[in-house]
Amino acid sequence: MRLNHNQKSARSIFLDHGILMLGAVFLMLPILLMIASSTHTSSVISQQGLQLLPGNQAGPNYVRVARLEAGFTDQITALAMLKNSLVIATSIASLTTVLSMMAAYAIVYFKFPVAGLLFWLTMLTLLLPLESRFVTTFQVAATLGLVNTYGGMVLPALAIALGTLFFRQLFLSFPGEYLEAAKLDGAGPVRFFKDFIVPLAWRRGGAIFVVSFMIGWNQYLWPLILSTDETRYTVLRGIRLIGLESGPGMALAVLTILPPLILVILFQRYFFKALVDTKDSF
Amino acid sequence: MAQVELKQVRKTYPNGAEAIFGVDMQIDDGELIVFVGPSGCGKSTLLRMVAGLESVTSGDILIGDRLINDVSPSERDVAMVFQNYALYPHMSVRGNMSYGLKNRKMDKAEIERRITDAAKMLKIDQFLDRQPNQLSGGQRQRVAMGRAIVRNPQVFLFDEPLSNLDAKLRVQMRIEIKKLQRRMNVTSIYVTHDQTEAMTLADRLAVINEGRVEQMGAPMELYSNPRTLFVASFIGSPAINLIPVRFDGTSLLAGDISIAGFSGLPKDKDLVLGVRPDVLTVSDAGQFAISVDLVEQHGGENLIYGSLSGVSADNGDAQEMCLKASHDLLPGIDEKMKLAFNPDDAFVFEKDTGTRLI
Image (tube, rainbow over all chains, first blue to last red):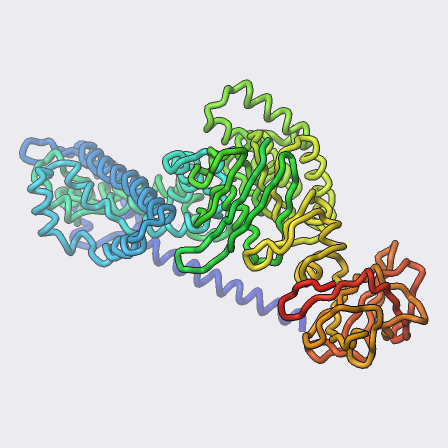
């Protein structure tokens, strides 16, 4: 009986891992296709579709991307576009993290009468993504003179209610005695935020930073609408510029996933902790 | 060092729930007062009102001669030890102890001196650079105390500080707290639901029930001279024996038995006779006949539990009696015993109001 049982569990382990591996391969496939295709010539890709096996055009393709000079005044280079994307995504990520931390702090610790209402209003914005309010948002941005500016690309994307929700739940899990002990120790609201909320929340806050960085990095439509100035092109627009079904296009796409990837690798410890760990580990 | 005075202090929550109904209290300089009562009686609320963590609905709280109703918690010159210690998890032991002093812009050398002194006194000097999660429960408790001591406050407030410790450590810390308080001679308020802790620590204790102080006094005074049924039943371990009785003009009647030696009691009311387990003695001429159910051997003494023949308790079960006897009295189960007591050592309460009559 016991032997049987062991055999069975060995088989089920195989099965479990088989399913997991299949899933992993399935999820990796687009990325593998992209990387492999970035080493083929544009004609191979346009005639035979995406390639799963590496070709021999890696050098020329990546050099082409690096030397790219496009646009009316040749101001669109890969480096300039990467810089634009980085500035926008980093601004969105850091401002979102800070703002949602502050909003959650206000909602949780200042028991003002409309706090609950404000919180649910914030949550309501989850139902209204930026794409659904382009026209009005553009009008506002235009009125404020934000067209073709970083500010215009960053500000409308800041209202990521997810961050507020996340920090609210985190703060609610802190024992109330922290605040009470701090009060007796002479800490006012600003000091409590600086000395307690920030140090206790910044690790978990890393997850919100990563998520909002991705949201910022992956923005396509809004920067497209808001910017006509070539110096403000983001790298995602660059792919279109260089040609979607081309070797260099694929090479640029590969470069495009690098910054978020590096960020995820750097933050993954905190990231998984925030998502998985429900125990008090702060 | 200061006196603390509560004058007609009341607490009503915004939803109308009343927690504290007019408490008057005078706490002397250097005194250790224990608030004791069942959970939900308002003892913690009262402490938190002194700390400034709960607002005062009406009445006055004075520390020294200063009215502190509207003074912020940090400016009341009180330090508090919390039940779960509330150590700051991201700061070292040193950081925990110095935080309140730094916020008060105290001189660095002075902070260091105070931390060194307190750490030595509490034997935590080798842990100063550890984080709270690297400490055991007892060590955390000490750090929490240290954080209060370095503040050098006029009043210490303890909110059930020992309830998260295991039994042995609790007794040990209890003794240390008492010694420390003696040595520092700081006015202290200590909240607990544990009557043993209350009895052993307090200079005076306040028994609180449903938002009112039922009785306040020295531990032995409350033990031997309780003013109400509640105080009698709450103070003392093992608990006092309470037997429902009526008075017929000459004796107390409990079921089939009649107990002589009482006079001047009302005849038309339900009464309760209270007899402490340690005033009962074994005697053939005893008033109570019990049949032994259980003997608990505590080493130095035995607690003998039995059912009282001929009397049923309010819930219909046989009336339980407890006798505290020396360790060599070891009756068998179901053995019959006769227990005697001197009526002068017993209390009689009015059942409905809980007032003590004798």
